Image (tube, rainbow, N blue to C red; front, side, top):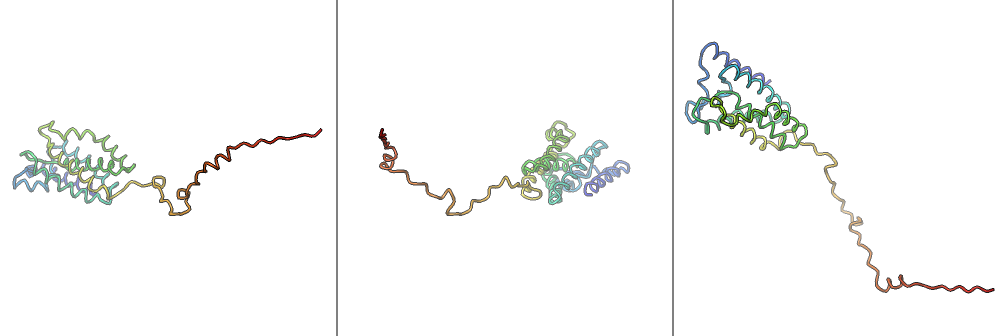
Length: 223
């Protein structure tokens, strides 16, 4: 539900900007400027072109669904912190430009899902991590400045926040099940336990000599 609501808002903003010409893209996040502070709230909903919004919509739909299905106890908190902390961090460290796009949120969820499954050592969540890295592993390349048109700083900020949240919430939400064979029961405090029974005293030298003494027996037969 949250995924569809978020994507619907993104598409409504994009279509309004595309066909009515309001130039909403100009209200993106501009690092270290007062007018750019508004972008902390708007950056996720603004997209540059059709390819941009289609790619982000598909990624958000999948990763957000994974987040709210497998981590439903903490999914709301994780989504909230990625949504706000990532653009705040970008506002502090980003290059002077107009940053737009939900890929900041996308990279945050990608990092959380991948690292959270690993640190929890939960077999099911580790499978989720493998699925995420298998289908979206190519996202890692855009953490680096390989394309001047791409806000790699935004990707890196989202990724960093997702990683930190995976560690911060590792004790909350779904945990690895501990099976009976993995636990060792405490030994009972029994005075008669075999490990507390003193061993017998070693035999003395005299006893040893007696045991080693051989006895000769002679038999006499009468005719």
